[in-house]
Image (cartoon, rainbow, N blue to C red):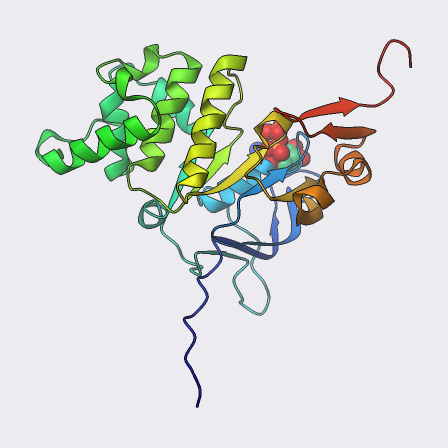
Length: 278
Ligand SMILES: Nc1ncnc2c1ncn2[C@@H]1O[C@H](COP(=O)(O)OP(=O)(O)OP(=O)(O)O)[C@@H](O)[C@H]1O
């Protein structure tokens, strides 16, 4: 007798020899193979110029991969190769610095407008007749989940970087997605705001939200991140469990300098041979 097993859920993000050209001397992403399963907290880590923003823009469909000659898709999100960013936002919430810049340039946006705007992925306030009690409740719940409930009523453009980050996180959480894709989430935050945000991300991870961090900041590697992809010059240097990826040899190859990670709380990179007594 054969027993039907439930089909395995499709990976969150799957890249099959994905290359992206951006006009530079080499591809910004160069034949990248990647499979990020649902439920596995992963960091994509690499130095400036390694292709992190290109990766994010591939997922948000601001950039497209080179086509494969045999027609097979180079990118799949949750099993779909023609995904609609709006349609997947209920499953994959995205937080990027570019999104903040766009929203902060609009002085008339209140915090609630930013969070409610996620309902139709717009930068303008949602038209009044589209704001239901249910949506308002969802927006308030998302703000509370991101520790930003007290920011209701403030104008987004007037918030501090730390406050704005909470609101952006709330915007990504408003559909209760199963996963978050975060671009350098703690960049620009002071030590207290960073600690607060990282604690929030850790709590979300424990609530079952899969974290995908794209970063070059060691301190963002919260303990829940169990898997690390190292990227250099558009290529994968390592794709391995945390302890195997964050070793001096691979980190040094990735960053192009002798580097090791002190995996404390928070983790920190140490550049070898740069101390005064070296
Ligand atoms: N608009 C562009 N035109 C030409 N080349 C570009 C463009 N944007 C990025 N690149 C190149 O693509 C490569 C990858 O850039 P990308 O911005 O994805 O790197 P990154 O890892 O996000 O860097 P950073 O950490 O500095 O943000 C780099 O070599 C960069 O010079």
